[in-house]
Length: 432
Image (cartoon, rainbow, N blue to C red; front, side):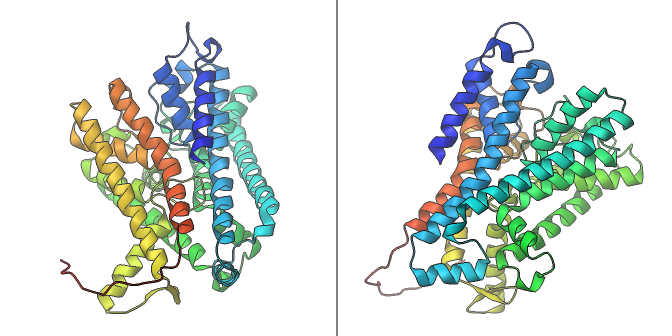
């Protein structure tokens, strides 16, 4: 899987280096093309050059194709890897896992791909149609321009890519709910993860029969979006550089949208660099957690974070089992969640230290940029283009590892599981 993504990035780099991909004279440099291709394939959205000004229409089509392949590939690849894991364990374990997660069987691979394709095309087409109509009738754009802008934003939103054909992202449409809300819904659907969408599709009214994974994802998404919107609104309500000048309704819309977008979408309807430091700290948490598993979102994933939260709550209560929605969580799942979080924190710490070593930028800006890259978010305080070549290379590595690292690590650890014929004597170290 990492090799497939690497190959796609290299193909995209070559295409973006063609003179026809540039809006001006000459061709893009190797580093600029590589950075843009990596950001697109890894559905991040960080840019070192202004997308509508630097890249020609052909170059923008290449970028759109790259983040469509990156997003669709992650969804199908993560699902197929999950099926591969199920195929390597015993029949009893497979049946238990299938019953607990309400997931697909190994014989449904083609059905999986068809449904992912159907959901992708349906959401992107509907979002494109709504945006095109509003951009034409509400903002006076010609049909061709409105269609192109609507299509690009719709595909970028569903794939949580964060690229835009507008230099200021969505800041020019911050007060237009017919632009902001369709993009918000597309981001949410793409970020929930395919297993959740599939289960909701099959059992739209069967909440009691939904798997623990689906319940945790939906509960966590609602909690993060609501909590994030409240905190962002609280800190930015009177900030003259962000939400301050807006009407009350527009402020609420902006706070909710940014709470959704900060969890790996990468769009912004207000100036991220002008936010208060408290708001940026809230963004750190939202970006690091990310969205649902086996979807287009990044981060450590909602289930990973909340599983550890349930484990902490069980420890506080003195319970021997970790319970979530009246189901006992196996210790193997908790150990895997802990491994993913520690690996992510290690990569992030190394990335922050490396960036600080090659730049004199403020610590909070560097932390924001590193989390955005490793969690494949795409938001920035505006320092991406200011980074030296070494800093851009560091971001390229963070984006790649952040995109393919978590699902690959989780699958590799699961596949390495094997019975151990002996156990060492137990001894309890001092904790805390």
